[in-house]
Structure formats: C-alpha cells, structure tokens
Amino acid sequence: MLGLELTPEHPVSDLVELGTQAEREGYDSLFVSCHYNNRDPFAVLARLAAETNEIRLGPGVANPYEMHPVTLAAKVATVAEASDGRGLLGIGPGDPSTLRNLGLEDQRGLRSVLEAFKVAQDLWDGKRVTHDGTFEATDAGLNFDVPGEIPVYVGGEGPHMCRMAGKHADGLLFNGSHPDGLSWAREQVDIGRDDRPDSRGEFTLAAYASVSISEDEAAAREAARPPVAFITAGAAPPVLDRHGLDAELASDIGNKISAGDFSEAFGLVTPAMIDAFSMAGTPDEVSERMAAVLDHADGIVVGSPIGPDLEEAISLAARAFTESRA
Image 1 (cartoon, rainbow, N blue to C red):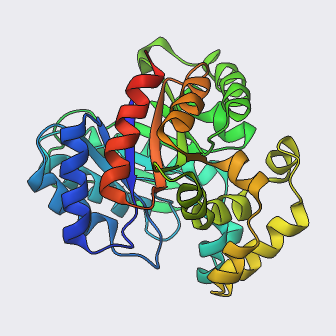
Image 2 (image 1 turned 180 degrees about the horizontal axis):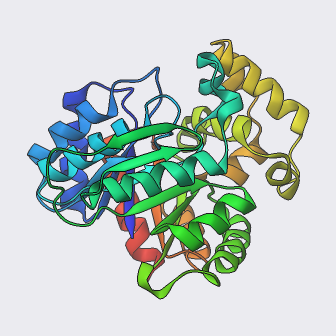
C-alpha cells in the first residue's frame, strides 16, 4: 500500500491537482485529513472523485464526535458512489489539540470509534440500524445503494486501538514514522488478529507517516516542524517514553496549539521529536527509513507535510517508496 494524505489547508483546486498527480505517480490510496480549522474534506473528496479514475478516496482520519456517525457513514458512502466504488474510511479518536477547542476532548475513546464504523458497515450493507451506545440511532438507514466494498482503516497508536483494529477493521493507520514504533504496532495488531474471524479477510498495517522529503535536507527537516508538533502534542505518555521525549514539553506544545500560538508551538519542536515522529530528509534518507519501517508494516501513507515543495515531494516520495522495496 502506498497512500497519500492531503491536508485541506490549501485551496481545493490545488488539492485536486495534487491528487491527480498522486494517481499518476502510482499512489493507490488518497486520504484527506479532517480538522475543523481546515477546509471541508468531503468537498475536496467530491472534486477528487470526479477528477481521478483509479485511486481510492476517503477521509483520513475522521472522528465520530464532530459529526454523527450515521451522517459520517452517509458521506463516505456518497464518496464511494461518486468515485464508482473507490471509497474508503479512515476513522480514529481524533486530534486532542483541536478537539479541545470544540469541547470534545473528553469524548475520545476506543468504544466510540468501534461502534461508529460497525454501524457504518451495517448501513453500507443496506441494513436499518437502531443503536444505543456512545451515540444513538433509531431505525436509521441510507436511501441509496453503496457500490463496492468500503475498507475501514482505524487511525491510532495506543495498544488497545491497535489490537481492536487487528480484530475488527481492514487495516490500521498507525500514527508513526519510526521502525521501532511499527515493530511495536505489529505486535499489538497480531494480538488482535488472534481473535479475528477469517471472514474479515486480509489486514493491512500501514505507517501513517509524517514525511518531509527534499533534495535540501535542512529545508525538509524545517518543514516537518508543524506536523511533528501536532503528533507530539497528541502522543500518549508511553509513546513519548518509547522515544525518550519530554512529556512536559509535549504538553506545552499542545497547550500552545490549542491557544492558536502555532509559531511558538512549532518552535518548541526538537530534533529528537523530528527523528521520532517523521521521515524527514533527502530522498536517500527517506528511502532508507521507509525500508526499515516496511520490515514491520505492509504499507506507508505519506502524510503531512510531504515536503517543502508539495508537487516535487509527491514525486520524490513515490520514488523513495519504490527504491525502499528494491
């Protein structure tokens, strides 16, 4: 699997051009990220569905709090219809730094994610759903047929989320860029897969990696600061411990992000954080890191920032991925 994450901080027309380029470069999956302070991912996905032919499309990673899960299921089904069966769903507990702005941080959890995509799968199968759990639905159903299968990828990094994905989902988008993290994630996924019914089919463990690639190493590492700040702020204490990172500093970064002090937050990012939470550097350096990650993962989703020059970076990352598998 070679996927790409596009962040709708850019104009929709620019994102469509980048998405069509990704299809030409051989990416097989395209996720549009979901944060309230960016453009609507589903508006972007609708345009991409019309302008692409083969690449799979979906939100990545949506959460079940900002939007009712039944509504989310209908939107993803609409993407599947508009793209002639190329829809997919990336769903997870959401980014705590931005959910805090909406008063939703305390709702984050495994159960809500699991219930949301299980109900979505029933709706996509044409069933009417009544549900009383982390959300409520009464005799809900979709008034249109959903073409093709919609794979569900759980986005997460905690042990229980990884195990749940291994048991119930089509894949895990592990929020990590380091081989040590992917090795650990594989162990957790395999625990979940021990209880996975054969009927659920194959499973894909993908590194949902912050990639910043350029011929200019310094520029690549500098461009990695913003996404690494968000990743660090949202990382659980065991993840920070695994990489030897300061939990108090990570908390400070998160507080500044929530307050809108982005420049200050990005300035607190250390070289060790960039090394732990991104693949940042020259094409050779990124390819080497990809190869190490693919010792444990089945694929890579090239995530934000991609690189200081987006168009160039999409091409460089695709080539680095090919070389990493040689």
